Each structure stands twice: as structure tokens, then as C-alpha cells.
Image 1 (cartoon, rainbow, N blue to C red):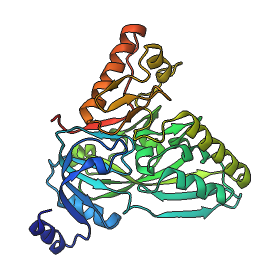
Image 2: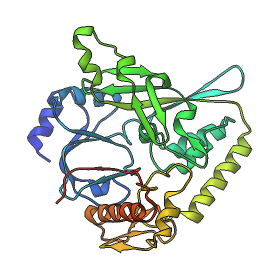
Image 3: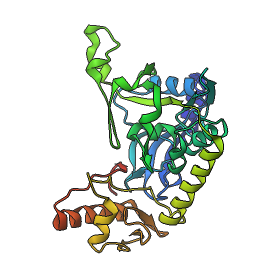
Length: 323
């Protein structure tokens, strides 16, 4: 790390930690890939907003939680990565008169923690989050889901931060929400003067969500969570580094079935392999590069197109440059 730049960060009033050439393999669940040119670990939300304000307007930014759905190419990411997992950890429960409640969780909180808090407080509907190995921020960004549940089905509202460090309150009505997809309806939610309308199209990142949950049976919810976790252990390669489901399921089918039908279960390139346990998972067997993983992603897509005429869409996010 450049100590003079870190000192400058301190003088500017920022309280987080700035690093240079940070190995992203340490921060993504695939345990592979290149470095980020810079990384910043904010102290809290106010510090994150202040840091964003300090960046040049054209600086590429990637906000990362647990890195469970991300691959950084071997040539690295030529911008700044902001880590939220240790900074945005606030969680608050509010009770409603009908026995239900709202859980406000910041973006760095792990999904399974939200599921546990809901179950322990006799709230229903969040059990599926126990099967999502990422943070609230990532779950919001992609409408993560499993076992019949989807993140935005229980969202009452969200808070975002933009490139200028401005915090905003949003509702589900501000977004077009679909299977593994969330897009902001920019034109419907402009909050700036007409003369500056273009700035409403700036990047925004989720920094918290409020989940609205009905009253439930805590014991039943905890049993359901235990059942989902057992199912996950039985069907997914949790003992090897992976990024969860690589592809979205196409309408009326499953990506895993299509990949397996192409004879690719167990197929390997370098240190990466299509899991013999679940064909929609690519695992790092110990020495995988990001290029190995990307090559397997491309091979699976091409094979499914050739055999079934279906183009599988990636669920995982790939950033950066090749080596």
C-alpha cells in the first residue's frame, strides 16, 4: 500500500483502509483471479459515502460483499473495489401490531443471518435466505433466490448510495424486478432538477434493505432452515471453492440438466472443473485461474447451444481484464 496515499486518506477525514494491488482471490468464493488496482474498506456507511465523493467521476467502481457471485479476470480490475462485509453490518428488528415485523439489514449482512433472526423472532418468509451464501447487497442486486423464494418478494424498501455519496430511499416500484434481474427505472424516479436530469442515471449501490415479514411459527421456520441447509449440503459441492449457480435456469428447464445432458459433468480445464455433484457449479480444484473458469463457462454455453439451441445466461458476474 502507498503509505503517502493512505496518509492523505487520513487527512481527508476518511476512516477506512486503502490498499493497492489487492489480490481479489482472497475476497471471492472461487479463490481465483487477479488484483484490484485499489481497494477500500470503509469504516461505516458515512465513510463509504465520503470515499465515493472523493473518487474521480470516471473511476471504475465495484462494490463487493462476500464475493460469492464474482470472478475477477487474471489481468485484474483497473479501478477501485469497495468492501462492505465488515462495514455495513447493521441489523434492526421492528415489530408490527399484527405480530409481524420488519428487519432492516445493511448490505454487508449475510443472507443466512437475516433468515436466522427472522426465525428466532417468529417471523415467516425469510427461510430461503439461509440457502444464499452472500450478503444482502448482492441478493438485492441480482434478486437472488433459491428453494422457491426470491429476495425482492419480501423487500419493502431499500437505501442506495450513488457516485456522489448521496443516500436515497427507494421502493420496489422504482425497479423492474425479474428472475435474477433488477433494473432501476431511471426516468420514473428522477430526484434532481430538470437541468441535471442526466445525473439520475449515475450508478447506485444498495446499502440496506427493509424486509417485511408476516408473523409465523419460529420452530417451524427453524426446522425449514435446517431442511434447506441439509438439502444444500447433499446437492452442492460446498467442500470446494465455487460461486454457486453459474447460469440462470432457462424458462421451464434447469441449466444443470442441460449441461449434464451434454456430457460435461466432471469436465475440467486447468484447475477448474464442472462439478460432478451439480453440473451448474464450477469448482476450483486447487489451482484454477480465472481464465480456466471462464473457458469452462464458455464451453458449457457452446455445448448447450449446439445440442439444445438454448443460450444459457450467466448468473455470475465477471469483471476485469484477461492476463
